[in-house]
Length: 61
Image (cartoon, rainbow, N blue to C red; front, side, top):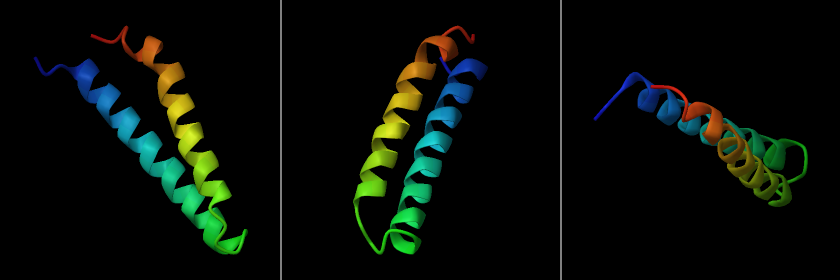
């Protein structure tokens, strides 16, 4: 069933992934001269943030 908690969890995951990927792409293009290392780091950072917040967000109902 669709609840307010699942909406918040989905929004948080989507916003975190979008923000990390976009910021990594921006850093890659403008600061590191199209290196893919900042983008890879941002992918890992998005995964770590979502994974660590998962237990806290599961408490929402």
